[in-house]
Image 1: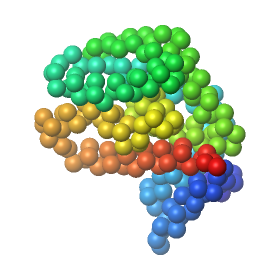
Image 2 (image 1 turned 180 degrees about the horizontal axis):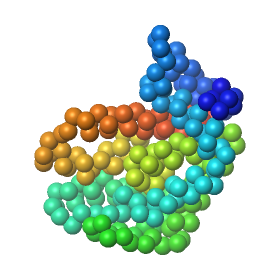
Image 3 (image 1 turned 135 degrees about the vertical axis):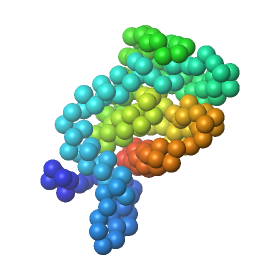
Image 4 (image 1 turned 45 degrees about the vertical axis):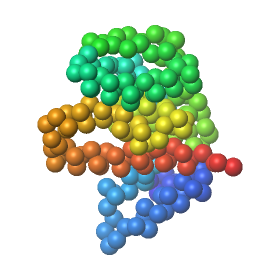
Length: 213
């Protein structure tokens, strides 16, 4: 049962086995922190399934100020790194989603075309409209969007255009540039590792929730 006492039911055997593996790995005491997929499924069943439209709107809202659209003017090394990491995601948005997003330099807000946001909305709705798997995949998409700051990167992972690792590296181009310049902070590194586990779980659930047959 979920925390809200709903049945913890999965749409595919592969997804169920992934949840079972997290439980099987527990020792004398259950550690929820070591069960990111279980936590995500609970959230999907107890929360997202009852607020599908609101959750989808949250993802689309990210596209309005998506990480991959805001570029550094300098230094050149950072600008080049951003372009290398983010241009493939923009190509995906244009070619696969039909969303032509506008770029901006710096942090000044730039409004995205309504047609582009509508295209992103359709892609999100397609993920949500997947029967029993819909709430699970939408919850996973929402988590990936929040963790990366990018609906485009999250959709690329959900549609198999990027791996979770590729999207994660792309989301941390700026942070990695700062680490190269000034060194790493231990606490920040630990937080990032915890968030990466959540990213992996979300990407995996998004894939496993759909029957591959």
